[in-house]
Structures are given as structure tokens and as C-alpha cells.
Image (cartoon, rainbow, N blue to C red; front, top):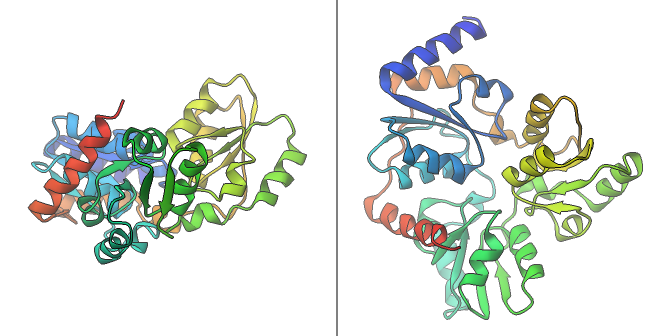
Length: 303
């Protein structure tokens, strides 16, 4: 089968099964051909929960499909490539979090959405890269535990002088490959281009940014800015989509080292097989799912 035939089959199965396909914007560009929604992980889970679909196919990594199931427990959630985990999310297990909490028994735990359902269930509140500062501030605590990302946790700590943010030593390997000298080289080459940085990066990289924001925030900034050139400091998938959607502007990838291998697992063929055979359905323990849902709901209630 060629690509157009695969796309036709997928679209036919979507209608038959009342399915919706979600694609994270780090996925292969070809996935957008069949995706109903493309964006960051929490946005995708929220639109899926609000849709009338019976089946959700999530093209992303494990924690994203789990989050969709947490927010839509009554729906069938399919995850085409179950081996596509998130390196950062895998750096903390429930027992690691319990040990971390025992060291600071009075500090609330803020859990980045890039984490497993079990870790979410043991936390006090979730956050995303877009609202992490607001979430930590909303707790009114002098000391807060942040899991699992020391990159985002370090950024939050730099923004809140009256809160001590103690971060678990997890990190995103893709963003941590980016170095301050990469920024310097690109600025010298494209001096008029604003530098747009994801807060999972090293603090030394973040400090060199003209704009700091989530995946969706970076894409929104690039869309609305009057600038014609941009240096994009995050995963390559963002650059590919910006180049496609705004051909009148130029987008420069900070370094070729920013490909997340796990995000590239899914292909159109995988999605077709997932729909044809019902592979692979996400199943979560009910108690864990309920507790994890509460941490996400608390986050959504933060203004």
C-alpha cells in the first residue's frame, strides 16, 4: 500500500469506529495527514475528553496516552507503539517519589504532566510547561518538591524568589543536549532572529532566550510575531510544522541533536494496524486513575 491508500483506509476506519486521532507536535510530519488534532500533550487529552469519540488513538509517548485515559476513562484509548516511552518520565518510579517525599515531609509535590499515572497519583497537583510557575505559586508554600524534571523545576525556581523549588534529578535528554554555545553560534549567524526556548532546557540555555515557553507557546509566538526569522530551541518536530505552516518566515533549528527518537516511533502504518486490530489499548488501575485525575483537575482549577 502506498501512503495515500493508507490514509484513505485510516479515514474510513475512523468514521466506522467513531475514532479521533491525536498527534503530538514532535511526531513524524506524516502523522498530521490523518490527525484530527495536533498539539501538546495536555491540549490533546483535553480535546479528546470533550469530543464525542468512542475511540482515541494517541500518536505520542506513554504518559500522553495514559493522560488521555485518565481524562476519558469511559473511552477506548489506543496507543499504536507501546514501546514508545518517555525517557524523562521513566526516570522516576512511585518508590522514588515516596523516598523523595520522605526527605521533605511537609513540602507539597508538583508533578509535571510528563510523568506516569502512578507518579501523578502520588503527587499533590500537576502542571504543564506552560503553567508550572502559576501552579507552584498557587500553593502558597515556602518549599515545593518538583518532579521529575530538574530543567523545568530550575526554571520555576528562577522565577519565584519566595519559594524554594527542590527538583528531582530527572531530565529530558533531547532538551539537555542543547548547550549555551549552540545559542551563541546561532545568534552570531542570525542576529535578528529571536531565540525561542522550551523550559525543559538547561538554565544556562534558558537565560539566553528572548522567549521562554511550552511547545504550543513557542508555536503561538512564532505565528503572531512580526519577526521573519526565528531560532527554535526545542524538538525538531516543532520546526518542521512551523516551516510547513508559515512558509513566508524562516525557522532555524538550534542543533540537529534535538530529535526525540521515541517520538518518531509512530508511522501511518502503525496507526492503521492499531485501528484495524484495536492495538494497543491503555488500561489503568481504577484507584490510580482517580487519584491522578484529581491532580490534573487541581491544576485546571488554577487561574
